[in-house]
Image (cartoon, rainbow, N blue to C red; front, side, top):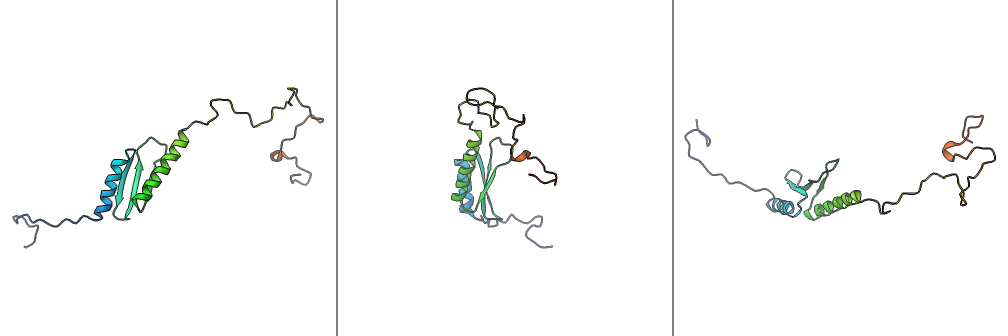
Length: 133
């Protein structure tokens, strides 16, 4: 029985090849620079990935073939995060209601002649033919 891994044989060093060394080093650099992200490089797809580490209802993962493109996608994702977290700019004022109040500018209620109000296009009356009038 012969072979390299046989019991009793001396240890033999084997050349360890580092695949895509510069890209992996760039992923490590990005991982250190972007503290809110975990940056990885996929050898199989030859692509950079970043996973956000902030609390979010959904997992945030961005991908790009270049490190520069990945950084742009990370910036875009952070901008979306900031826009979603920012309160509306109205300053706490109550928003006006979208429904009409039924009052005119003088504060008196307007009256319909038939006693019914127009309900808009969603509430059109049906004619005898069954189609909307």
